Amino acid sequence: MAAYREKINSLKETKYAMTATAVLKSAADREKQVIKTSVTGILANVLLAAFKAVIGFLTGSIAIVLDAVNNISDAASSVITIVGTKLAAKEADKKHPFGYGRMEYLTAMIISLIVLYAGVTSLEQSIKKILNPSVPKYTAVSLIIVAAGVLVKIVLGRYVKGQGLKLKSDSLINSGQDATLDSVISASTLVAALIFILTKVSLEAWLGAIISLVIIKAGIDMLRDTLSEILGERADAKLAKDIKKTVTSFPDVSGAYDLVLNNYGPDAYNGSIHIEVPDTYSADELDQLIREISVKVFAEHNVILTAVGVYSVNTHDPQAIEARAKISKIVLGTPGVLQMHGFYLDEKHQTIRFDVVISFDAEDRNAVFRQVLDQVQEAYPDFLIEAAIDTDFSET
Image 1 (cartoon, one colour):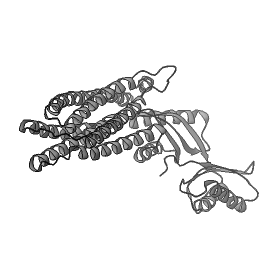
Image 2 (tube, one colour):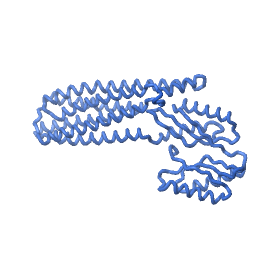
Image 3 (cartoon, one colour):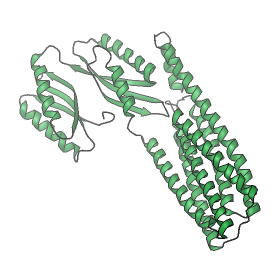
Image 4 (cartoon, one colour):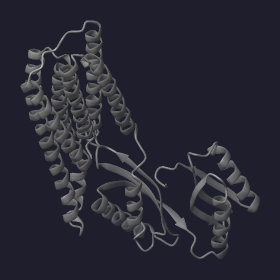
């Protein structure tokens, strides 16, 4: 959040100051909502755990005891979410100049590991119970409390996950999914109890083993998704499209390319982009344009542009304009090529420069690039071709 506060301070005299201040307020409100949701989860899970633990020991039901343990793990997950949210809001410092926003991803990973551990532990206990079975003793009161627990968990799971999606909090989403799994566990325990009452056949241990495998799979899936976030995923396609639309809304910007967004926590992006502008622009005009673009992108999308690169566009040379059209047709006609940009023909130095975006789906990206170079060089043998291969960060 600190990086955004500094950016807002730099915008105080601009027409976007009010919008930028609202961004900071939104971040603070988000933190409060995440903590409020987590506290709700803690209280609900502690109460459920207490009731189920008592019932489990009184009835001798291993499934209900394990269910209580799951509730405690959920409460612990909510505590971790609160701690992670508070740490993520810490001010940037010399060691971490981009702030601590990614701490939320680490807490989501810890929650995933807790879920995974709970699944492995419950599987171990279930196997022991299969090898050394015992006869549970159910009462009407115990079954009613378990049924009430199912309803509470369903409501809690939907609420926590819904808040997680709304607030873009992986920790809350994982906690919500875990709560939903717990409702399935509790419901299965209830079904096993009814089967035992009606048939005197105890399926608890076997049911516990099956549920444990489901929990383990859920933990692995959560962990995989969180690790993917930490490694760095492609920028959201809509956000990338909207940013480029904002950038190209400036009259003299004919194109916006090479958008790279680095995520430092939910809704905390730093990025860079290249723009195409007329080759008649002076340094002071470019400076003013880049500043205005940076301010508008931050105000409208909550993204800090740390760098705006420039591609100059031929505007007065008919040969260059004709060459651009011809070379564009050659390049874009090559299988695997997504885009060409940054084109400029320098008649004085007999050079042609451009960038080529090649899809990750291409079998050999370097081979596609060499094919493009050969075709363009054949069409313009008297020019030095200065082309560069670009990565598809957010073009599709």
